[in-house]
Length: 435
Image (cartoon, rainbow, N blue to C red; front, side, top):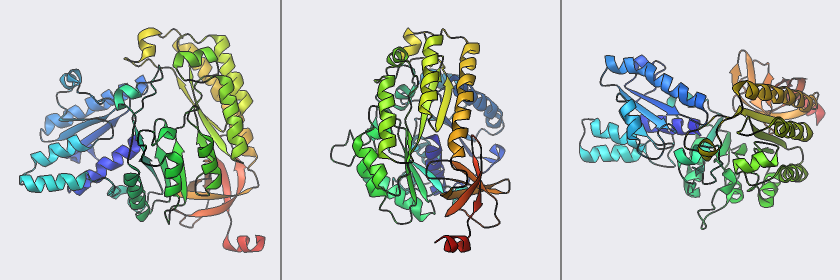
């Protein structure tokens, strides 16, 4: 979400005549877009802000804009008092405060300033930042802002506000604009993306939106994340199975494998519910890959409860498991009522156990690809090899002198590991011989 937000800010600034620079010392405007999902991210944001203060001291005209979850959706006088050298505080996904500040500050007439402001903030007119124009293959489009579910550990509803679906017309216009600029793959984003459209009864739901987007000429692939077990419908699974452009990859977090922990998290389902969902996804979408999220060391999680999470992950053999150690977020229900009684050492021990388990599971899944021919969308060269992804979101590297950027090409998998695979590019002649 922050990648998409940052690109929107950069696009708005370039419409005002600004250009990007890799050197903060040369900047007239610095935007720090922040995440506070975990304490380490918040600490990193404050550390970066402190490193920018000397630049402001040397150049009082430098505009520093703090954006994102550290700011939140409500005015925070305490934050402003702590950061007196920050000029603009912007809520998540909202470049308007910065654009308003800059257009008011510039020496231009009121009418000209308002025209520039409207142009910079125009939805559906997203121009990719100059530094990625012509090179961005895969892009993100937020479709649901905020969240109203309020899991007890999560700070997002307090920082990003209640759930709001974007008008589907704006999403389609943005997708068309991205494809015109060379983007081949679009990922739709939402804290609970499956709930798209539930607050807009006159428009499409997520399945309808995906089907509309799939009609865009030049768009090769569609993805969406993150799903919630309670909101994945049969209609959505059928849409994925029936629409070739929608990648067979589902991101659906479980967070824990013990029912008591899930209840304390306010997730709204049981471990058995999740088992049945995984079985349904696999039955309806042949060859699907499934990714999950897991938090270890949630308040009150006993060794026995953690073992249930371990056993469930070992049983289901999911393609990817994003692991996190529980981090207290001030203001959440868990912080107010549950404390933090699992030691840092124990959290790390549990984290490592799941990490080692998932490494072996992923290696086993990837080994099945060895010798197979699969289509890969190539994104960029990395250390002399081209990097791309399969429809199931497997990372593939291929050695070739060809320029593969933005191309979907068949490859033969020649090596597999737990985190990536290597492949041989199949030439046109090879394809003809196999036809």
